[in-house]
Amino acid sequence: MAKSKEKLVPVEGGVIPERDAGTPPVLEARHLGIDFGGLTAVDDFNFIIGRTEIGGLIGPNGAGKTTIFNLLTNVYQPTRGKILVGGVDTRGKKTYEVNRMGIARTFQNIRLFKALPVLDNVLIGMQGQMQYRLAGAVLRLPSYWKQEKAAREKALELLSIFGMESLAYTPAGSLPYGAQRRLEIVRALATGPKVLLLDEPAAGMNPSETAELMENIRKIRDTFQIAVVLIEHDMNLVMGICEGIAVLNYGQIIAKGTPEEIRNNPQVIEAYLGRKGGAAGC
Amino acid sequence: MNQTKGKTIPMPVRYLINTVLIALLVFGSTAYVNGGGVSGYVTKVLMVIGINIILAVSLNVATGYLGQLPLGHAGFMAVGAYTGGIFLKAVNAAEASGAQYLLMVAAALLLSGLVAAVFGIVIGIPALRLRGDYLAIITLGFGEIIRVVLTNIDEVLGFKLTYGASGLKRIPKITSYGNVLVCVVLTCLVIHLVMKSRHGRAILAIRENEIAAESCGVRTTYYKVMAFTLSAFFAGVAGCLYAGYLGSLQPTTFGFMKSIEILVMVVLGGMGSMLGSILSAITLTALPEVLRAFEDYRMVAYSLVLVLVMIFKPTGLMGQYDFSMSRILERVWGFFDRSKRKEG
Ligand SMILES: Nc1ncnc2c1ncn2[C@@H]1O[C@H](COP(=O)(O)OP(=O)(O)O)[C@@H](O)[C@H]1O
Ligand SMILES: [Mg+2]
Image 1 (cartoon, protein in one colour):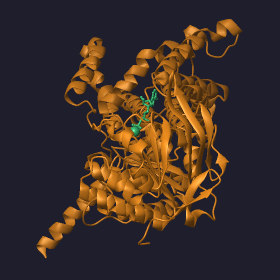
Image 2 (tube, rainbow over the protein chains, first blue to last red):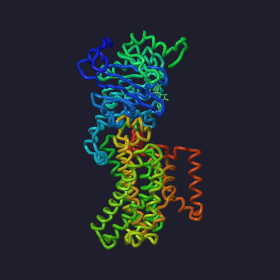
Image 3 (cartoon, chains in turn yellow, blue):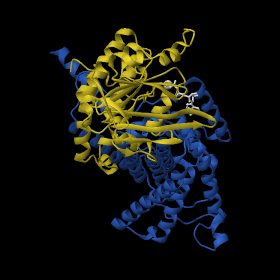
Image 4 (cartoon, each protein chain N blue to C red):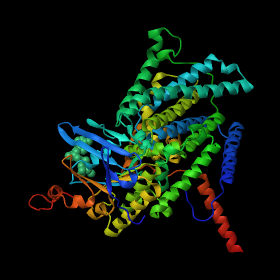
């Protein structure tokens, strides 16, 4: 798919890319909000993600972006509002259950299983797709061999998206920073998600790595036909691949729209640059 | 994890070689010990070493692999010991023989493990649902409660079960070098097989990063309880062996210091290394025997060793390195391969 951007069309609850209009949205937040003590970190957050959309969530530091990911994955319980995954309310579900419903994520502050080999990091992501029981493991029943072999092959295949197969037996903690971020994406993909939430995937990467990442995110979306929501400060990346963008400031959405609309929105410019044009945010 | 360049031994061959080696170790050394190859005293020390290996290796599941800090391992050992002791007395194992005797011993070991495991589940579920250090506090309490209950339950409720502070006596002495060794091998084998599976990976993932594990679809509470229960099960088995070794039990044996003693073995060996747990269980059991004259200073030596290891090798002697028979075999194999090629 050479051209990536499509017109956004209105559906109930927001806008999604035209190609996804025929299928129900995969992810929806309605009037979502959370308070930490007296602090309202997120308030009245509404968004809707089409089945194969790449969405962006931007805003200055402390705006509440990561908090929204924590809400979407039920790491935090919302104070107000609700989240729908494929139309199903996730209220009261555990984080692992939300993952199995199709939400996978990466972390802004990398959270790999550092002491474990790269391959095992990916295999842990496939936990939900393996079924053999404890007895199957202890007795090394055929189910063990079959599922382990299949999982291993699939894990290596996923690693090859980022050309990381040769690192399969390296401890994840000893990878360079950029590779750790890529491994987090592979691990998230391994869970077989419908939506991939990426929290600052390009942080700490150089421009060429970032460009490559951008291509890979698009490739992942095209190959797996899933939706991606990314939080990013790198405007080239965000404007380059996101179809719909929501801008957050002090926990509130201040603008929503296509990259062009966002780029020219005076409120966004103000939030990012300040009224007098100083360099704030990022 | 153990990728070696060059030749790798195919899976069935590896399993066959491992099985043969283990069988040789078990039958060979048992025949040697039973045939009078070592003195009765040495045999006893070997049995205690074996029991301590099971205790250390099982505690390592909860500390090293799961990353929790249970302080009541001796409590599970006590549950197993009293269960096994009472069972063995009840079925009158001392008078049984042949297949019936073997069956009774196996049943006692299994039952002790299971009862300890039930205690593990009951304590683990509330303690492990919470994030943080609650487990340390709750297990510490559990260990003490078990000891106090064992001391007082007969007086209070009028049972004739544990015989309180005077101790449970005349337990059939079922523990031998052979069955200790079989239990050691089975314990290590089962734990190894669990850890090298999706279940083991889930347990390790929780240690590494609980939030990330849960975000990857790992049922964290379930696996925490599973690891903790596995740990309790084998502590119970070790307790049963201990009961059958001593022939009498005193509640005071299973105090807080016993739990710490086991923990020291695990920490010294390297949290998360089964080989480390085994080696330090051997060392810390044999050392006081070798240095009989200095036994008064055993606890001093313990603390000193701990402090020194923590200063110079904070990850324990073996770190997280784990033993792999195939890795060693592959090295040997590769060595012969090369020397053959040189000759040719
Ligand atoms: N667990 C928490 N407890 C209290 N305050 C929190 C917590 N998590 C986030 N916050 C607060 O919520 C606000 C938004 O944080 P965050 O979502 O991390 O911002 P960002 O947009 O940079 O990702 C910040 O003021 C932060 O201090
Ligand atoms: Mg953030």
